[in-house]
Image (cartoon, rainbow over all chains, first blue to last red; front, side, top):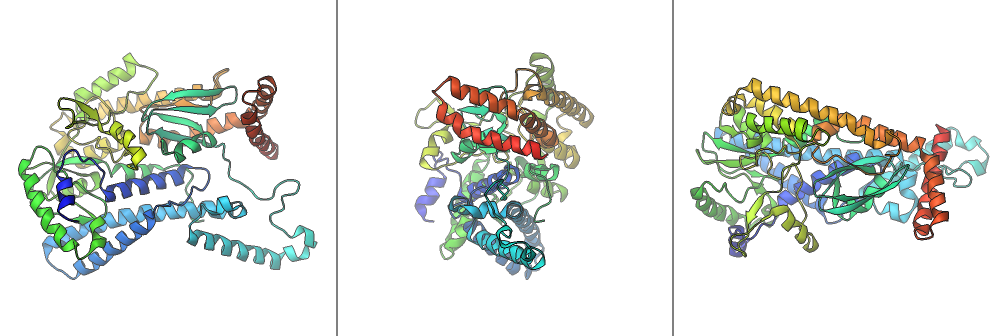
Amino acid sequence: MDIDDILREVDPTFHAIPQEKQDLQDLTRAWIAERSAPELLPWPADGLFERINGNIKAQIEKVEEMTGDMDPRTNFALIVIQTELERYKYLVRSYLRARIAKIDRHTLHYLSTDNLRSRLSEMELAYATRHQALLHNHYLSSFLSSFPPQLQNLNDAAGINMVEAPDLDAAVFIRLLKDIFVEGRGVDSDVTMDGRESDIVILRWSDAKPLVEAGSAELV
Amino acid sequence: MALSLPPGLTHAEVSFLAEMEMVTVVPRQRLDSIDLLSVSNLFPHPTSRHDFFFFFFFSFFLFFPKLTFPFLSFQGRTPPLRPPHRTDLPLWLALLLKKQRRANIVPPAWLHPASLSEIVHRETKENPTAFSEPPPAPSRADLRNPGRAHRQQQQGNTETATGAALLSPPFRASCTADAPAGYLPYHWLEVAESLLAFAGDDCAALGSAGEIRGLLRDLVEVRAAKMRDSTKTLGAEEGSAGGVVSLRGVGAMELAENRGFVLGVVDGVRRIGASAEATRREEEENGGGGGGGYGAGRGGDDEEDSDEDMGI
């Protein structure tokens, strides 16, 4: 932070969104999307969570320092800081829990291909692999071992696929972030709609996914 | 279970989100800037010129120690509160200040009874089938072309190519004192409810709380009826089972309330019509060669769906 940054801040032609507001917007958007989408979404790649975790850690340290202060003035600031910290932590926690719930439900599906694996963070991948191994060993020791060897797999794809996948055609609500054509498949006809910015649209997740991934729409 | 909530935001989560909306407050006490994780209002309210310079010097001093802790420079801070200068703060902080009688909240213009009754009129008489329009993105004068203004959000659109992302509610300032009258923002019901409940005396400046509540009640009812009617276009009627339904202007709480029902109807219609849809796609594929590859790719999905139906 030097004099140029300060000058840029007071320059009214410079409307860039500050980093911390952008992070909160990204986190909120990721949380809403994860709560609404029928399948697991890719882990944010741009170091958003490293940044957020670092900020939360620094904030907790500050709270610890301030708690020693008994000045009633800083006391109120402390309340505000702690309230905000809790709100922030709730967002992070709820986001991670929503992801883990999806991983738990379809573990084998998300571990099946490299493409799907890449959606998980390192920690989640370690969790999913270990959890699945534990579960399989438990099944083996309790009942699978008494089956014939060719029936002991949990991921047989011959005949009907044993690996359950989330329903990608489930309907979702999205908000358009820019004017764009929206294509949707329906039962009787396929529709193309001339969407406007801040339209709220119901359509199938498989149709909404390209829009959301391109950043022209968000889940609500 | 890691999370036992159904997919989609619940009411509590929606009101949590609504508490991030920015509102305008008039402080009654001085309060120094507080370092927070996300709240950032680098531009003080335009009505207070003194704030601007005060903040400029203040921030200069604040940034100085940051040089030694570059890590902390990501953090936001609340603008320093100095009565009687207006400031925009998130709703949760404004309500906290209000409860401790440290600030008064300036209710947004759309909460005025005149604005509400205009919206009721529009919703019932002028356009009895669609929701009223969402608020336009705030305009800003363009310094490069004097005399012209443009919507900030659209400027954002052109900036997406360069990496700047777009803001959406609750981060658009749609509940501040600057917000235009006659438009309902995305979190209108939640914000109006908490303002009336916790800042009733500030809302009294607009009109009687009973009148505002009555108008809000009317809006809730007329819009709930529209929400229920929208299921007709969701495919329950013959020949209208398209894939895209637009609910422009709907509110967050209304979505949360009807999410289960509406999405259930859409998914139900899809399941019932899965075999019809598969035959239609096959026919289209055989009839027109143009979209052959497209149809073939989708055909597989539909077969899976009909398998599921049999399983159920």
